[in-house]
Length: 251
Length: 328
Image (cartoon, rainbow over all chains, first blue to last red; front, side):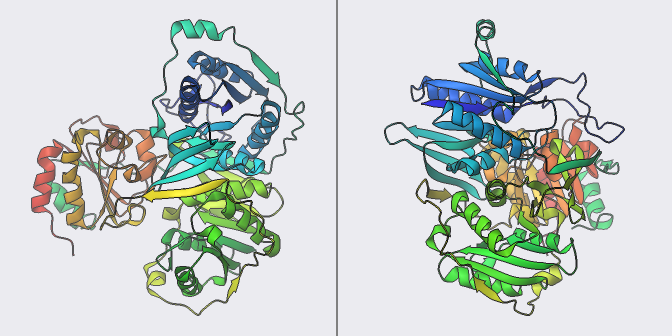
């Protein structure tokens, strides 16, 4: 069985983002970019499944401008066998990403598609659910545990839901999106970084995959959130209780 | 403007976040027609339908899909159901709350309808223009849906509060009708619901509590975290936690507040030993009053706190437990 993992290049999670003065978006020039943390977890899970001899190959896929190849190289250095880059230089919304993934699934025929549950830039939390819908595959979103049964071709998924943990059983092929506590992604070692340089990355354009990118959304503006007014420091518990009672009137 | 609200129910009543979705739907237009879609099976569904029919004055119709297929909140049949309801209803908008159910079902349904959904909406400026947070709430994006109908959204329930008056009132019954499921063709069995485990708690729901007491890694152990629980009990509030505290196993995952956890906006949020990572702030920055107690005077949590106290939480919490008034 082949596993396909979708990975996204985003502003590094530790960077404090800046909104552009013209309100068209967020400053991305000269900003550290990394693999989306949830995508790292998805890739790590795929690698562990392969290491447990439950999968034969891990294919990493990324979409976007040419720099997405750097993110794919990181994925290859972590241990993915090969990469696919779908080059596109404008904004891709999740619906288009899902359509490109559907076309790639038709080419690659994976038995499992793993994605992060959301990207930490647009915080959409949509792509996995959408590709599952387009393929009519079962979905296990927000996974904190995945157990594969190769014989029965079934994945058992623990999902983090609002009021606890829900367990589902999914027939393969399936889509699984990963939550934070699924695993701790590995670091790429130097020898593996060197090895990754010779791993193949295949290139496509959406046209070559017969995917029409239509956009039914437009960003009107991006602004800074309202700032909270500065608070004060109190020096004792008594003063705190007094403020909460008599100034904030909350207790 | 005609809106379909995908609603959840529990124990014979519509869940509060679903009623927030009705509040959001009402803000498109005062003359909007709002249909509420409920699904499930058994007597509790019909009890919930009757509650739905009178829980908000703007609801003009309740649609009920009664089938074992909807007994559990699986995305596969639910997305098909939304697709079916849209085909027969031709709505201009479809809404649900942005909780783990809505996040799971709505994008899948949107893909079936070939629509880009807009998730986690916190503000509505016109019927097709919405504000949603990006980058963990460090920026706000205003987006316009330019596609053909329907416009599909999930809304953050803390941004569309239901007034206490509405909660306490019963309104004129809206008509209840059954969804015709004769053409429902979900090929079942690709996904199966196995189980659901949760910790039963007497506490108010974290997402809707008036008071939230939260702890971070500085609590050091599950045993120490009980101090946070005691304080929450004293205030009649809910318990929250940072990702670090959940990862360390002090508390279960459903107490995590933040970008990828719960979004809360209580009247009072008290944070103990919480450093204030941007991912955590994303989940609580809309709280009305924020109190932070931390040993480290430079902790970023103090930048959003209305009242900060630099001190050792192991001394501060016992003193608060002693001196805070009992809840009314």
